[in-house]
Length: 408
Length: 211
Image (cartoon, rainbow over all chains, first blue to last red; front, side, top):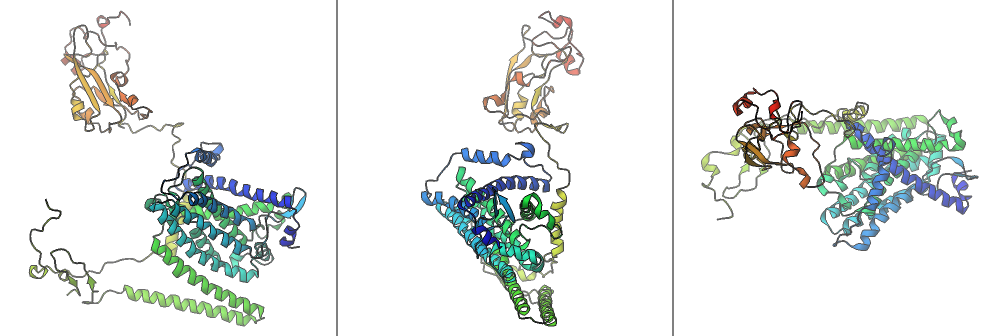
């Protein structure tokens, strides 16, 4: 029985309970994620991090949340009130919605009912996640626009440009997964990985592209240009305070957890155990798979923290260049290769043909890279005598403009 | 007044002979981006730092000692018999670049002998909202009356509380000291005091009949 059939038998109250559980998981893991991030980042910087509220400071983010909620809620005079209020709601709601299709456990017993901890299983589940996260960008853009202030507007525009650019690369990296699994349903992708091998092994370039673009997608360091503190004050949420700001904060972290969960589902075998540890999946009546899921999500979350602790923020043009000129072409070429291999496999091509194709691809890649290396070396060659470039120099007042040409 | 500065002499490139092209080209060694492996070293730095001992001092619970010559709160010192060293000369106030010190001198009388000699500081205030802890006042003090302690916890919730009066700044009375005002040590002049000839208080200095 597939997961879709299993979920179709859920009575209404179980769906409500599961929706509640998913919501609670999102909120609690956000609280934990904020604490974990502050502690781990502190460790990376020879500090301790929050350790005073509760044991090990575990309640720090809870108390921060209460503090935020009790603060004065300011709506600027220049703001468009309705949009200003709706924007954080859109941003948060969309992040939570993307969790609906993530399979978090295998078959488990939930209040005497045999089901899986997955709210629904759409045939186009991954596309649904992409769609919902892009609607989440509306929250950011509208927040920036409705604030009636310059920095939030710039932050919102940057954010939309960024998310749109990286969504392309992200979508392309997922195409290889769809080709390989033969489905867009999250649960089918998980089970196909369980039958064969994790996608992270066979589709490693896709995995790398996805991980890079998920950082860009969530506006996190080193791609956090939308809220670059040094340049845009706070970015799109500069004018927000109190609970509305808390909602954006929540949205950011739920979004991070959502893309991490999607990465887990698509590349790391979802809720299944590591190869060789399959027997653990039966522990706790199947609930142990949830622990595997959490471990994998936390692995991705650690990557987020590690990147933030290590890399400085990218310059905007370099960031865009990287997205459009590197990530997208590379993933296009990679999809071509994967699709060709897949077709060859399905048409029953002999092994030598497949190997010849793979060898040809490797040869072409090597040729291109050596050619580009050579052209780089040529451009670095010392300037020949008397062939200095012609730089136009802007004229200064009372000085005739100078034309610079070859040094003699 | 003009908005712009008129250049004194028109600079002519051709006639001056100063040509940018006269400067010979020089090849500058500009290394391109480091290899990917080289760049990935940063990740190891942050990862390994996680397992190092962190440098945080758990401040309110643990108070790390300051450097021995840390500039903290001021202190008005006393002579060994308890008389104040401050003579109300206001040199500290004049030296202060932040205008944080206010001093009013007063005359010493036989009934009210606060410090050896003729004068004492009647009013002495340091405003810690202005003080920058530069220590110029300590350098200016001719009698070593003003020094600095290592005490650094000077935060408060009222501006008034951060103007320290003479009572707040005076050094505590140690063994053998008597609270001024009281007469000078018998047979000693203020010069003797400054030379350090007075080692402790004399019983005759005690006006209250204690100690």
